[in-house]
Length: 161
Image (tube, rainbow, N blue to C red; front, side, top):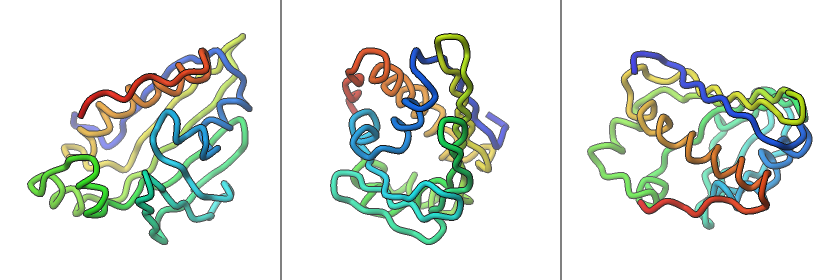
């Protein structure tokens, strides 16, 4: 795990427009992710993360790039005590996590026959940091639920914490 970038690739039987909608529509993101985003989805726009009524607002949470049906990139969320408590992160992990630099995530959407190739790149991570380990487990589960939702209409059940 000596890299500052995590990459995850999958193929989803959907269209680029439907995948874009699933990445940006609050009703859909809440289903497979448990988070509703508030944003205009334009470069420079703010992003508010709403997880079960816990709103995370920070001027550094912004959309970096947005090309509907093709590309979406934004800075990763701010770590708050309420978030840490909600996800069951103890103080020994939370304290050093808050000192890590802000990372960013990019979703590249490419048509591939009757599927769409989705490449998730989470970069600017501390190479041996806590966030690197957390997203290494989190993204595969999250994207699997997104894929299930788009292909079957049902997200995966939330794994136990």
